[in-house]
Image (cartoon, rainbow, N blue to C red; front, side):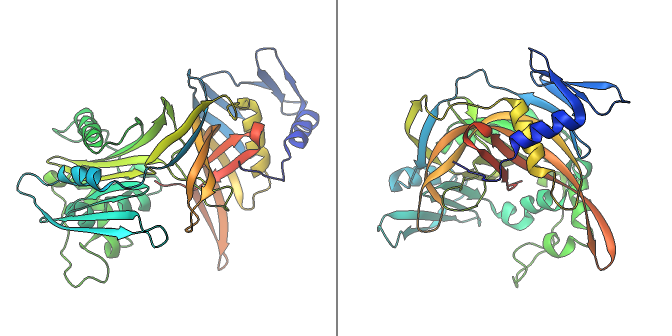
Length: 396
């Protein structure tokens, strides 16, 4: 479990109560008195949507997603690679005139077991199955670098604003994405975390910006001698989906964090890019097996009020922060590493229930005498019952 020695929850509650003035009702509603001259504000932690100002720097305007299922403790580990099964998965993409052109196995230097199997196809696409993930990459995905368009844009929906593409519905694209996940044996695919309709007009606009041309304007790597200029047309448009993975119907925290051998957690999600004519990319990140589960141990979740209080305390002294806004709160599992491999990755983990808090940070930095403001999106996982307080790294 994650242990943060600098827990100041009790102190924070005392400070909030004595300085701001507060009282609790039996239903969990908190009344906060900002000062003697202002009106009181109610925070209903049992609501499905919370809109409130918690402190001078923290605001909440968030939907709250709770599960009606019982949390249990599961032990999970990497699925590993089975050559015969991987070959069947690779055959999914060897169709419609596309042939398998190369197959290569990579062995673990310590155990001698198969660690990765890589397949290449006649059209330039590839499929890789490893001890921890499955990944299909079409030639279009390699050339067009869909992930960079999402990564480069901070306010993504401002630059990729469409909900659907013309003559190609989001519903149909999502259906195709899930069908391919079934074909590859990817189980537990849950709700969509986020998706983007990447239309030719907006993708062209992003690509042609001066700061993006070097990365996006040409196919291949920056060092490649065979670069081709990229153009975006209607037939090139895609949907980019990011899905939760579920354990027994409860989502798993999709972001990961590397802290130390004890605190490691693997990012766990499925990403699928669906084109008008075919699948462009599939990434099943952290392919796992449930090796032991159903235990009532480690299954208690703290109250949302305790989680918000701890979040506020953990961030109140962060340098440079001007404003924080919580935009989504969700009950999820988080697998925390129990056993590590030689590469410092969690090969065996135990699941804990946590509050996944998505928030935006408005911050200011000074460089060469000039002040800069920026807004970034991050995720915390919180469960004060087990001293789990962790900022996760975004995988979007």
